[in-house]
Image (cartoon, rainbow, N blue to C red; front, side, top):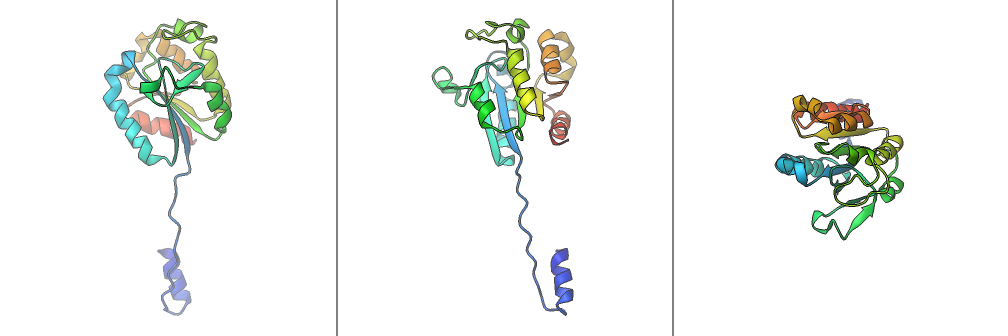
Length: 187
């Protein structure tokens, strides 16, 4: 508007419309959703979050995992046993300028994070902690969104471990928590 007014004034009152291109969201996001088990209680709110991210970000890739990130993830939960994608493929395909968001309650046995073979669904050759460290090393902007009430986090060793692995960047799935998390991704 200011540009049109200035140009019109400079043109002696002859209308000189200055168009400005629409701002486009160029933020690139990788979103990983924990599904199944203890996350079943949080399906509705996570679906709402997923729907909001689909409309907000032009460059969004979403994946699923169970309990913790290991050597593979999947895009379609109905085909999770047949169509897994190697996690190394994601680390190699998506550049370091992507922002990474993990969504999960981080509630599990601590050995699922710390030990090879700790996964409850399959034999993982390497501990989950090693995989999250790979993500944190490659992507400067990484957060974990936890749908459980923040006041309960202190009662779970695995939540404390996960929070430490993401350098304290764990936020509750609340309006304020999402605002703080998004702020952490843009700093």
